[in-house]
Length: 508
Image (cartoon, rainbow, N blue to C red):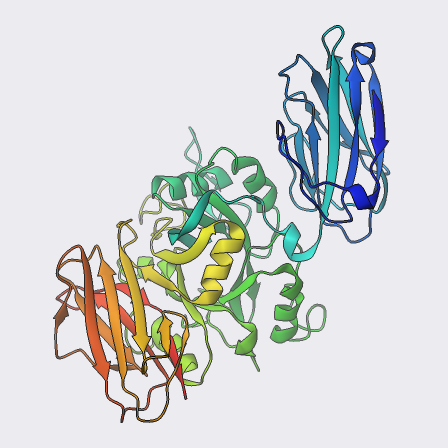
């Protein structure tokens, strides 16, 4: 096998096996190409490549191992000091990262220096000339965090998921088989529960650890219609917050030993591109829930992207009833909206037993099932980047019951002919302009729209019912009313809240 290394000016992008086209790629990619002949049968070829400093994920793609012409290649990878895995003839796409890797490869630090891809030509037909191209792609920072790098679904739409789940890699416990003893609950069951609940995505956010990421990476190809987003619940004595979309380490020790304050901890995640979401901020902190309520001094909420306004653990503790009104997660969030912060409201099951979760039988007691509540995100596509961008946009609502895939809650508003905003956006309003808006509700026939303006429930006495499977409720806010934000919830006729919407922000 004769191979040549392509100079940076001629580098091509990593390509899937069998692809017939090429595209420009990063100048840091390494591409080696050549041909194999029948004289190479049974031989090994060592292909060296250099890994730059600071890389936290590398991807190796080998073209020419697709067997269509009887050519079978066996791949193994070596870093400067050790072997990192062997992939046989069926794994021409290899990912190795600090916390996860393709099956049969070892995760861990990626030392800078000379690496080697060892290719054995296991089989090639007589008189065959088989082209081969090896592409090595390097990532660091935000680009290195995704387990699944391609979109599972293309096209903009509403995607349903759970942003807060736990496994036995931290403190989730379930019953063993067949002994029925309490054991750390395997990661598999959380992903299975998400799939069974018809979710589009799920984020596993074990407390302070990264050990769940390797299992997620190995399981994600099996659950290939479920977007698996890595995450972490940063657990401090002054509160808990999720990092959504992260595999790299971030300091979780708050104080002299670790990060000096909460804002420094937030900043530690900035380069990863993760969304910061404060969890269950309204829970009282006591011996039953250490550090659960949010009390971190001098919190800079401009560094925060989201607030968990509906937590399944709280609901499970109160007979499946999500908190509402004064003292709730929603009230806590709305006080920050009143102060001018733009924070997306999301939900999470906070599940710690994906198999059972029932009081009296689960080792951890009553639990909200994975996917209850469901957070529904309007995103450009079903990918990690798409979902996180959707959260940042604020076009998000929470389905507290989580069992109605067709439900939609959306909000639009306009002030004059030139200013329009959708849920999560900013409406620019001139003095003397009224606000006209529309609440779209699908899948909630017979329920009631609750329009909230700066914390005031302005339709409470009007009973604006949802009629039909996809309804639009219009409203007007007079020009004389000063407005900072408005949003909509949906309730049953007896007042039970079923959908929580995000704000439109109003500025003059």
